Image 1 (spheres, helix red, strand yellow):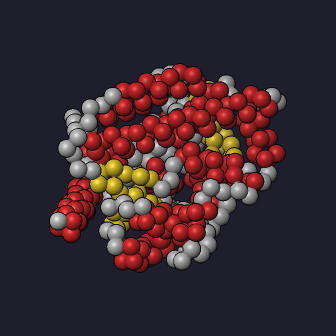
Image 2 (cartoon, helix red, strand yellow; image 1 turned 90 degrees about the vertical axis):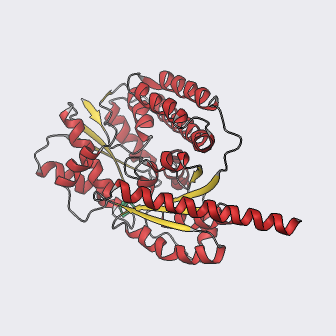
Image 3 (cartoon, helix red, strand yellow; image 1 turned 180 degrees about the horizontal axis):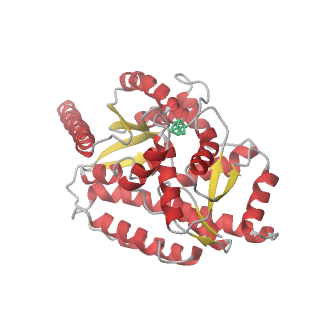
Length: 369
Ligand code: SF4
């Protein structure tokens, strides 16, 4: 059995660790590219949201490399993610791809079903092996998310543009060539050391932007056109509302136990959006408010064209922009998104934030003297 899975930012690292620690033969999906999207777009319904199209592209690319089994995470809920696994199965069947599909539903309180899916997949009855593999996969996600935060801090301050990404990109190349938790963890630790050692320019003015929106577009760099790198090089330190380690902790551990760490976020969203409407719309609104309260210089919302929950969140954001006096930019991406236009909008927004900050600083100085 050669097993593959959909690509979503750094999730491939955690999933690679999980499957390798379970002793499975893994075909890690290629990093998403224009070609991945083209393949997915060709075989998907036109109006379906972008992540599904890219997933289909991932599967077909991995099947061409020899994968015969796909593992997918299932879900239920008010947005289209609930139908992803069923639709993807149908699409692959229709185009004649002969693959086995393992659907792992997030536990929703039923850990027995969740674990029996993994027992079957790993062909083992040993619960310790599974718990150890899961624990190590989650640990890796925390390590890589920590590294990301260091990169967000360092990019806008680096003396030599590209220094952070030299180490960051090397890490991704190296991870594909090693096996299992220990080797990957060692690489991440080394990358952390290297990135921390990148020389900073003490005179650089850094502005802070909260990145909110749909999880796939926030996390997968190919669909947000490597926004975090572009912004970092423009002198922007970003903070993302969603991360993989957070998602896994919430959905695989806390939600089934009826617990959450997002109460504060939901409370912040409540005056504008009282309930969960699917996707992460409530988190988009809640984090928008929290970032504004924390004095961030601006907010950027990013989501795939036709994403229903984020359209609702977008309709709310102008109120937050006005009430908290914080500039807000919304970027919607799909397979037609052009790099030049996207970049121009980012640059114009960052220029506006820089000017506003300069103006604020001079007003504060005037008041002081
Ligand atoms: S959150 Fe949006 S983009 Fe993601 S599956 Fe739901 S509708 Fe599609």
